[in-house]
Length: 253
Ligand code: ADP
Ligand code: MG
Image (cartoon, rainbow, N blue to C red):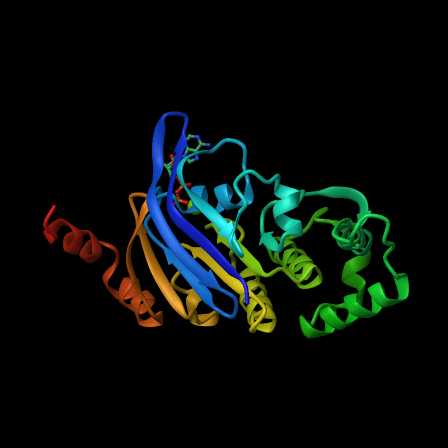
């Protein structure tokens, strides 16, 4: 059983506060969705969890299985079991997906331990079958000339091979055409299970028709202002975010 605990997190970019006291716990086996209007700090949250250097944590903590990850480098966080969908190089000409993934898996082995090539390919092909990915795909160079959908396929395959405890995915507006949307949702659905927690950040209620979340959170002005189950995502689709803002405004200060 794994947990990702975000505790009263405050984040600034320069001296501008962006995340303003956000708390959230994701346990393994759970899929949480964070939705919210543009500019509310969703991607900032994802990048801080990933260890992006532009963001300053001014308060609070992020803990994986009870240990703070904030002082860890991005690759240390990955080795601890965090998967961050965008931390990987966007294009690596001349390096096949199969070799890239092999290096990524090798990097996570203990010092001095060598990957077993036969076992590696067996596992790779099993994951590709699970995700319905064509064998030819892994001989292509990483992201070189890829469509949005192929980039997503590569990302989901990385996630399948690294077997993280927690995956944080920021599905921004770009690259999510129908094809990419289906690849992400089929992939997450194939990988979800008792050993994996998912924090899915999205703008698109539509994505949540395919990946049915256990919990939905609304982020507004750097905080989670409302949490619920999947029906909250449907309410947001039909009513937008204004009613959430009005509810907030009606609360006593
Ligand atoms: P969301 O993903 O919810 O749309 P972001 O986290 O991308 O929101 O942005 C939150 C706020 O932080 C916005 O006001 C945005 O302009 C600002 N911001 C994000 N990244 C940077 C950056 N690298 N430099 C300066 N301001 C930024
Ligand atoms: Mg964003």
